[in-house]
Image (cartoon, rainbow, N blue to C red):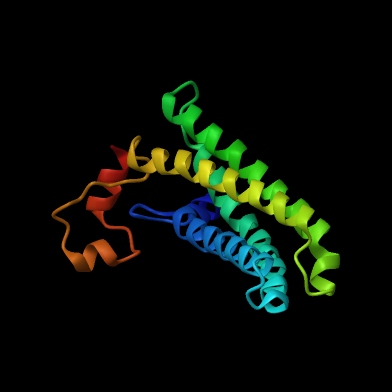
Length: 174
């Protein structure tokens, strides 16, 4: 159990959110690179960047999804939070599947330094799913308040420290 808790992060410092930032950043860059390539802006360079960013995004998806799943396991069954988190998870899995298909379909284009239209469109679908899933994920945090401690008067040194404090532990319990 300690390993799973370590993977999830500590009160006030969960692992899933910063991993989502990195993963979303890769997929966002891939989408922008694909658009730039299709528009003829440094077409060959952006074509290769598009495919490589998708691959890096898929690699980062593994720990991101794992830490999200570990958080999801802690949510009470039958609650609005569990429903919102479940929709978030399903949507993000669908996005990852679209990106995986785009990587497979786009590899020949990568080799030829072009973004093929079919793979590009699949990647765009993945990006739209990513935005939708991210919206649900944002609701998990900013509406339902999952893993938010609400220690507004916590001194900066304590707030920034990843080490557990009694205040953080108490706030995490509710």
